[in-house]
Image (cartoon, rainbow, N blue to C red; front, side, top):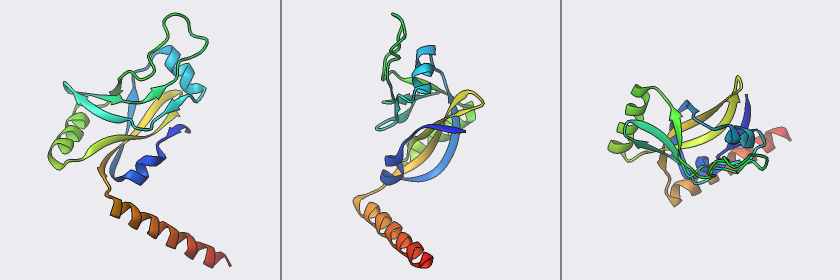
Length: 146
């Protein structure tokens, strides 16, 4: 599996609780642009509307060789998930104050898949603690190498 785009900021801003894979409904010009690597997952999130899941805020640049029917860069894109998965994630978002965010996009057997996660936002204190812990682990690994 080859990663197309990774949302690195999600691991810094959120505490990841549960991960899942979902497919996406895309047009031809979007696929060609994705294969060229023109995707950004920053500031994107998953929204639930009428029992369906949509990715909002994801930017796929327009394909330069497409004709008059090129796609809109930031349109809402439908996720392909089972109904029980959608209701499970939607209910957890409503009750517990959690959110669903995309973590990465990749190709799996020629199809574009998205790894999404149920996440809880971190406070500034939590972010500092995580950074402190990572730097301590990094220093310990360097000391072990020496």
